[in-house]
Amino acid sequence: MEKRSILQVAITVLGLTAVTAFAGCWGNSGHVVPETRFVTVEKPANVPPGVVRYCWEEPIVQFEPEGPGVDAEGRWYSPAYVAVREVRQGRWRPCRPMLSELRGETKNER
Image (tube, rainbow, N blue to C red; front, side, top):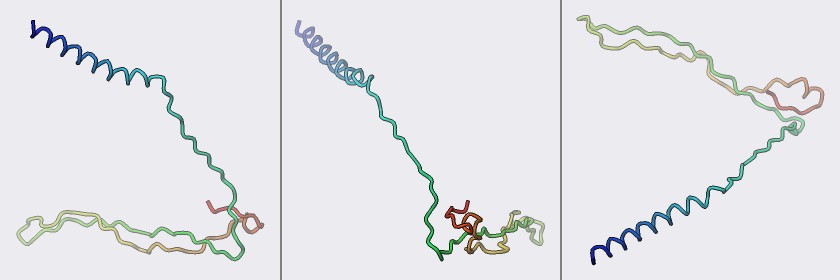
Protein backbone atom coordinates (compact mmCIF):
# COMPACT_ATOMS: atom_id res chain seq x y z
CA MET A 1 0.00 0.00 0.00
CA GLU A 2 2.87 2.34 0.77
CA LYS A 3 4.36 1.84 -2.74
CA ARG A 4 1.05 2.80 -4.26
CA SER A 5 0.82 6.06 -2.29
CA ILE A 6 4.41 7.02 -3.24
CA LEU A 7 3.56 6.31 -6.88
CA GLN A 8 0.41 8.48 -6.64
CA VAL A 9 2.38 11.34 -5.08
CA ALA A 10 5.08 11.08 -7.78
CA ILE A 11 2.47 11.10 -10.56
CA THR A 12 0.71 14.07 -8.98
CA VAL A 13 3.97 16.06 -8.65
CA LEU A 14 4.94 15.29 -12.27
CA GLY A 15 1.45 16.20 -13.46
CA LEU A 16 1.47 19.52 -11.62
CA THR A 17 4.95 20.32 -12.98
CA ALA A 18 3.83 19.60 -16.55
CA VAL A 19 0.66 21.66 -16.17
CA THR A 20 2.64 24.58 -14.72
CA ALA A 21 5.19 24.42 -17.55
CA PHE A 22 2.54 24.34 -20.28
CA ALA A 23 0.39 27.00 -18.61
CA GLY A 24 3.17 29.52 -19.16
CA CYS A 25 3.20 28.73 -22.88
CA TRP A 26 -0.58 28.87 -23.20
CA GLY A 27 -0.75 32.31 -21.61
CA ASN A 28 1.58 33.91 -24.22
CA SER A 29 -0.35 32.78 -27.28
CA GLY A 30 -2.28 36.09 -27.52
CA HIS A 31 0.77 38.30 -26.98
CA VAL A 32 1.51 40.65 -29.90
CA VAL A 33 5.12 41.66 -30.58
CA PRO A 34 5.36 45.36 -31.56
CA GLU A 35 6.86 46.15 -34.98
CA THR A 36 9.84 48.44 -35.36
CA ARG A 37 9.41 50.97 -38.14
CA PHE A 38 12.21 53.09 -39.53
CA VAL A 39 11.49 56.42 -41.17
CA THR A 40 14.15 58.00 -43.37
CA VAL A 41 13.96 61.55 -44.60
CA GLU A 42 16.08 62.60 -47.55
CA LYS A 43 16.75 66.27 -47.97
CA PRO A 44 19.57 68.23 -49.57
CA ALA A 45 22.67 68.71 -47.45
CA ASN A 46 23.60 72.22 -46.46
CA VAL A 47 27.05 72.71 -47.97
CA PRO A 48 28.78 75.92 -46.98
CA PRO A 49 30.46 77.89 -49.79
CA GLY A 50 34.11 77.04 -50.40
CA VAL A 51 33.84 73.44 -49.20
CA VAL A 52 35.55 70.90 -51.47
CA ARG A 53 34.16 67.37 -51.52
CA TYR A 54 36.45 64.49 -52.40
CA CYS A 55 35.52 61.35 -54.33
CA TRP A 56 37.38 58.02 -54.25
CA GLU A 57 38.79 56.76 -57.56
CA GLU A 58 39.13 53.00 -57.62
CA PRO A 59 42.57 51.59 -58.40
CA ILE A 60 43.20 50.11 -61.85
CA VAL A 61 44.39 46.49 -61.63
CA GLN A 62 45.50 44.01 -64.24
CA PHE A 63 45.23 40.22 -63.88
CA GLU A 64 48.21 38.29 -65.28
CA PRO A 65 47.99 34.49 -65.46
CA GLU A 66 51.27 32.83 -64.50
CA GLY A 67 51.93 29.27 -65.60
CA PRO A 68 53.27 26.48 -63.41
CA GLY A 69 57.03 26.15 -62.88
CA VAL A 70 59.05 23.06 -63.81
CA ASP A 71 62.42 22.09 -62.37
CA ALA A 72 65.33 20.59 -64.37
CA GLU A 73 64.02 17.03 -63.91
CA GLY A 74 60.55 17.92 -65.23
CA ARG A 75 58.74 17.94 -61.86
CA TRP A 76 56.26 20.71 -61.03
CA TYR A 77 57.55 22.84 -58.19
CA SER A 78 55.04 25.73 -58.26
CA PRO A 79 51.39 25.67 -59.28
CA ALA A 80 49.80 28.02 -61.79
CA TYR A 81 48.26 31.21 -60.36
CA VAL A 82 46.87 34.59 -61.36
CA ALA A 83 48.92 37.62 -60.32
CA VAL A 84 47.18 40.93 -59.66
CA ARG A 85 49.26 43.93 -60.76
CA GLU A 86 48.21 47.41 -59.67
CA VAL A 87 48.52 49.72 -62.67
CA ARG A 88 47.38 52.84 -60.81
CA GLN A 89 46.73 53.26 -57.11
CA GLY A 90 43.36 54.36 -55.82
CA ARG A 91 43.22 58.00 -54.78
CA TRP A 92 41.03 60.77 -53.48
CA ARG A 93 40.32 63.58 -55.92
CA PRO A 94 38.07 66.63 -55.75
CA CYS A 95 34.59 65.77 -57.05
CA ARG A 96 33.33 67.51 -60.14
CA PRO A 97 30.55 69.95 -59.19
CA MET A 98 27.07 68.90 -60.24
CA LEU A 99 24.83 71.16 -62.27
CA SER A 100 22.53 71.62 -59.28
CA GLU A 101 25.44 72.95 -57.23
CA LEU A 102 26.41 75.37 -59.99
CA ARG A 103 22.85 76.70 -59.96
CA GLY A 104 23.06 77.32 -56.23
CA GLU A 105 21.22 74.24 -55.02
CA THR A 106 22.92 71.86 -52.60
CA LYS A 107 22.44 68.21 -53.51
CA ASN A 108 24.80 65.36 -52.83
CA GLU A 109 26.63 63.72 -55.72
CA ARG A 110 25.17 60.34 -56.50
